[in-house]
Amino acid sequence: MTTQLLNCSGLVKRFGDVLAVDRADMRIDRGEFVTLLGPSGCGKSTTLRLVAGFERPDAGKIRIKDHVVADEGRHVPPEERRLGMVFQDYALFPHLSVLDNVAFGLRGDRKSRHRRAQEMLEMVGLAYYDRRMPYQLSGGQQQRVALARALAPAPDMVLLDEPFSNLDAALREQLRGEVRAILKQTGTTCLFVTHDQEEALSLSDRVAVMFDGRVVQMDTPSAVYRAPIDRHVASFVGEGNYLQARAVGERASCVLGDVVLQQPKQGAVMLMLRPEALSLSPLTADAGTTGAGRVLWREYYGHDQRVGVKLENGITLVARLGAVEDCEPGADVTVRVTGSGVAFPL
Ligand code: ATP
Image 1 (cartoon, rainbow, N blue to C red):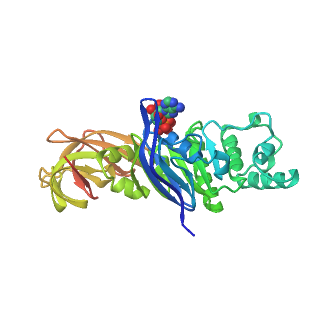
Image 2 (cartoon, rainbow, N blue to C red; image 1 turned 90 degrees about the vertical axis):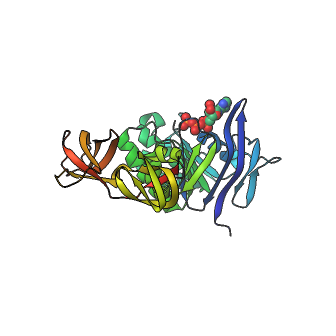
Image 3 (cartoon, protein in one colour; image 1 turned 180 degrees about the vertical axis):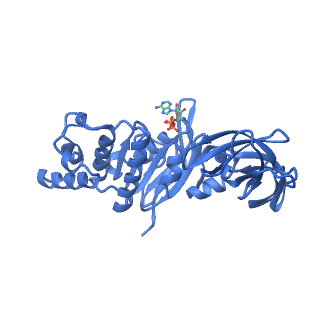
């Protein structure tokens, strides 16, 4: 039995002059939680709609388990793809009770459909809401019902398109953790779309980063963050400091001194250092000039802080430090590199 659940190869989708998806490749294993991450308009929703079967690709192939569901001559309709879907706008049937919404797509007699729907409601923590109508629920509760409905027929995979974007920050964080736990508990494979890098990194087994219709990197959250394949990916998945440097194998020298590289490079490079790879210490008389600078600003977050430092040569860097470290604006400091960097070609 293959462990691969979804295989998209060379997917292309045009809308008139717009090339929405441009030879996108993606492979997802059974039980994996994969996030499609990219800026607005890069083709994430269109890719999801191609997988769901709401759109037909102009080229390429989609395989779900061992079945080709889309290629040049073939288009298996959405209802035969065994996928569940949750979108950002809840999309519950307003005239049906919560229980009937969840039971809607199920087969069998009324009693067994309701039993299954009730089980699903219990799983999403809404066991006692079965008789309510959708308008009597909060946004977060409606999204849980939508998830229960999507999971009720035990689909091979669920597709989630920005399902939390209409919710406030606290609820969003709570619900996304719950949803991940439910999907892991049921062993359901998931393709999740978001433009929020924090959401993607915190939830996923793997992240597929998409730009201009193409999946440019697909890897674990830590690999995408720590070893992005290019500057585009690097700056989309997190903050970075960019410095000119000269690489010799696994080290590069820059204005902050010698830095260990994630991957060996040679010659002139652009070095990227994440803010947490920098540390600050009070400038002492014998410290030398390497890394000497002054704190410009500080943003305090409670759990940590972002600090802007201007080096003597005019370059401004951002460091992310523990909350207890003392660094008021105006303080003279030495910036040291305590983590590794990534070198990109100039
Ligand atoms: P967002 O994060 O803003 O939802 P996205 O990454 O999901 O964006 P898509 O919705 O897939 O991007 O759109 C990709 C491109 O295709 C955009 O330029 C969009 O305007 C275009 N597009 C999408 N659907 C259609 C359509 N039905 N007709 C014409 N153009 C479309």
